[in-house]
Image (cartoon, rainbow, N blue to C red; front, side, top):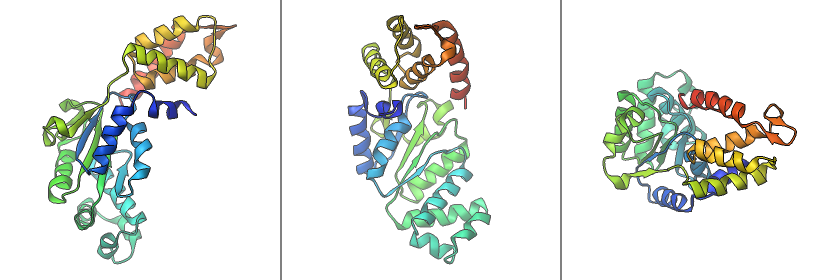
Length: 251
């Protein structure tokens, strides 16, 4: 089992079940949590069991969302979409955003889909307006995935889902769970070293229990440049990790 597969299931039984229930009940939800906590991994674990879900992996703009939804509906040979483009799905490529949004909206109104919008980071008011249209005008449940429920990350999405029952937050592991997770990841990645225990303590502490950060640092600890005989060079590893993690989390 890969490190990512471990992150999908380790210590997340309650969150998995809650998310499964929301998918099964077609419940609109704001799924939030810091980068690396495992939001996308949990979705990937569950989505194959729900054939009515339209999953957009990168929801950077209204245009990108509508384009992705049109492609997904076309791949399903959605009857409403095919009628709208007169049986020529290739015509979607050159359509304007307004025309594409109209076709997608018609298809969503005509069937019982659920839309998942992943990586919804710092969305614009226009994105909030699109989500409102999907949820209200099209009566389509949406699972919006953001790094937090704060306005700078979830934008106007948070205002559309004010009730706590409409939100599901994934948190970093507590220290005990994080240490157990780190140990299991070491076994899977066959990481060893004379100072492994002290390194694991540092990884758990400085990762703040973030499973993605833990996996990244353990993978780095296997690289030759962070090894000296059977000793893991923690300081240069951590400095390099911070630089890469900060850059990627800002995206």
